[in-house]
Length: 220
Ligand code: GAR
Image (cartoon, rainbow, N blue to C red):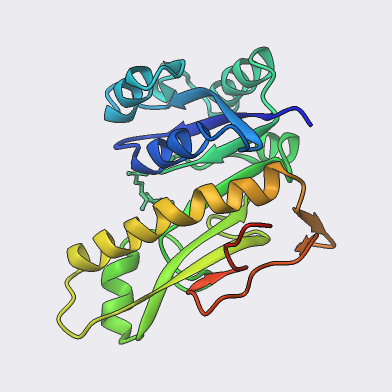
């Protein structure tokens, strides 16, 4: 089966993008990272992508007077690059229904909490303030409402009593770097797909006593 062509949308650092680029180097990985797009020209992730040999472009949203105009440019760039699937990785721009509908079920996002808990910003401080003992990260198909949509995979991370938002964010980020390549593998290979507003899976999963669900294993 031919590899799915992936575009990664970023706005900043790009560490999740880098994890996907590295994972996609494996010969058996079912996706190739064809393009990185940032809505911020100064995003450090753009240089990281180029250094890794991936085409990377900025589409500066401030150059467009309306959201649909920005999104039309984004859409055309994706179409021109023959993109199959979009992965948001720290892309901090809300998208309108027109764009979301065009890429429905072909568009993933990663969020640093166990959704539906703590959508939006300041997730780690809010998790600490609420006293939850576990938080984590979620990869989900994108929907119009921010940080909602059918969940592909989650990883749990314990919250320690001495955690600050920064120490917790660092441990969740490590889990994100494991989870996103795993989730993209499931989707790009066709083993995870949306049916009736939820994700269904093909094939067995190796449900080891890990904090990943569905489990990571040779068949996943
Ligand atoms: C990541 O923690 C990602 O989950 C989060 O932004 C960070 C980007 O880091 N995304 C969101 O909060 C989306 N709601 P990165 O640029 O190093 O990948």
